[in-house]
Image 1: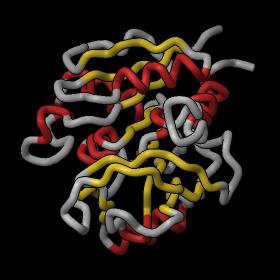
Image 2: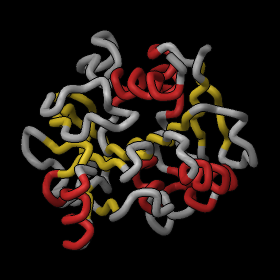
Image 3: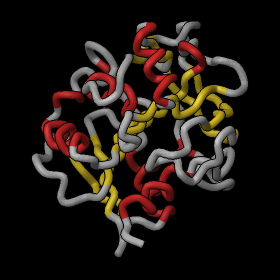
Length: 225
């Protein structure tokens, strides 16, 4: 059985094609989902890619959160459908309250585009089971609104529940509180990551192949043994 992984394209998405390539390289079948779709077409998991959905008007991800396809994704995520939000997709997940907190302007008020190292902290989620605790991976960060923020009570709960997916390991490039680069839901099925694992799936086109395990990990969760 070949897993079918949906990749949503919103107006302004930039990295949907790379996300589909990563899905295919992992051994799954990428399924194109359009922002106006009223069905998920039976996919086994969903990726919300990076970019500038709806031009990032109002706030990053604020309009995409109300797209028709999100009306399908939000309840499906509540029923356990694995969802990965990358960069703008992470922002959309926070706007949709599938993950807590918010992403705000980088502390230097500048767009960042460079390779970064991430220390993996939660390796039990469906998206990260292919990593070892404490493993450092090299991926690409490219965002202007990538600083994660949350109130103290939310941060305490995230830490207590082990919901910090990973932290920046070579400094804090955007000013994210506690160096948080990504989160996972309490169920371990919804994950958000500000850097781009889909840009690091082989050494030919990226800085490493370290990001591929995000996509191979979810296959183990959705394909029967």
